[in-house]
Image (cartoon, rainbow, N blue to C red):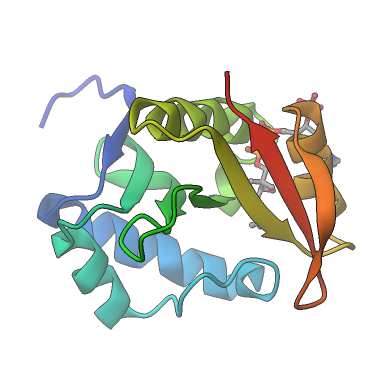
Length: 155
Ligand SMILES: CC(C)(COP(=O)(O)OP(=O)(O)OC[C@H]1O[C@@H](n2cnc3c(N)ncnc32)[C@H](O)[C@@H]1OP(=O)(O)O)[C@@H](O)C(=O)NCCC(=O)NCCS
């Protein structure tokens, strides 16, 4: 391994399985799955996601083998034109601008796929995430399942 690792944004792949499994464990220990639950954060799901090769995008920020953020853009597999975005940053890596940078990467990845806009859902009391989304230009567009639906028009 390179003794001087750098932060990288990349798609999930089999070599990231230990890092993703550890990331999911840290999210559960921090009770982040109360705010963010696109799927169960199990070891079985980590295996599936690291081997997934469909149209949806499961992306991470990594440094060496450590996963520092996890994001997804999904809906393409089901035939939707507008992807749904989800994001979580490792509890120890928050408040340093990684969430903002990773969100912009997710936006560029969606635009690269031809998406014109993005949607996401957030709990009304998740004020940190709401402030991040609003800073990035997301606007509320209704309510669904007790969460606020936000949309962003991509350039
Ligand atoms: C929401 C989340 C992704 C933000 O990640 P992050 O790396 O801390 O984000 P950043 O450091 O880029 O900060 C982005 C913005 O979030 C807000 N923010 C971050 N930390 C904050 C804190 N401790 N208190 C208040 N606002 C905060 C600020 O608006 C900040 O903007 P600023 O840099 O202009 O002040 C992260 O808190 C997280 O993973 N939360 C748990 C999972 C979750 O809720 N996901 C969203 C589900 S909808």
